[in-house]
Length: 110
Ligand SMILES: N=c1c2ncn([C@@H]3O[C@H](COP(=O)(O)OP(=O)(O)OP(=O)(O)O)[C@@H](O)[C@H]3O)c2ncn1[C@@H]1O[C@H](COP(=O)(O)O)[C@@H](O)[C@H]1O
Image (tube, rainbow, N blue to C red; front, side, top):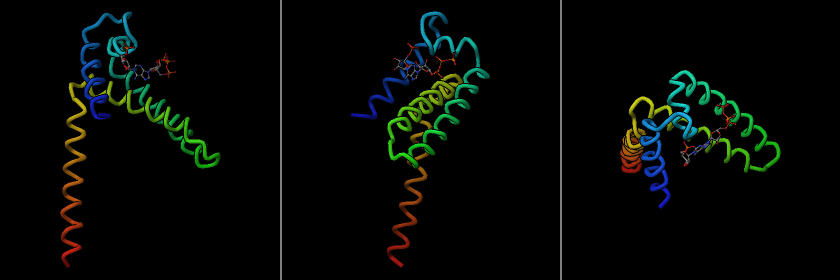
C-alpha cells in the first residue's frame, strides 16, 4: 500500500538522525541543522512552483511530480528534525476532512 511508503520513509528518516553525517544525505542535512533544511524546503518550493507553471503551459506533468516529491521529502526531513512524524499531519488532514464531511452531510439534509 502507498501509505506504507510514507511510514517506511519516516522510519528511515528517524534512523538517519543518529547516523554519521558523511554516511547519508539525510544525516548530512540533520548535521547542518534546521536552517539548511529550511533552505532546501524553500528551494524545492520554488522549483515546484516553476514546474507547475511549466506543466500548465506544456501539459507535461513529469517534472511537477518529480519536484513535488522533492518538496514532500524535504518537508518530511524538516518535521523529523523537529520530532514530528507524518501521522501528525495525516491526523490533522483527517480532522479537517471529517469536519468538512459533517458540513456536507448537514448541507445535504437541509
Ligand atoms: N526520497 C529521498 C530523496 N528525494 C530527494 N533526495 C535528495 O535530495 C537532494 C535534492 O536535490 P538538489 O539537487 O536540490 O540537492 P543537492 O544539490 O544534492 O544538495 P545541496 O548541496 O544543494 O544541499 C538530492 O541530493 C536527492 O538525492 C532524496 N534523498 C533521499 N531520499 C530518501 O531518503 C532515504 C534516506 O536517504 P539517505 O540519507 O541518502 O540514505 C532514501 O532511502 C530515500 O528513500
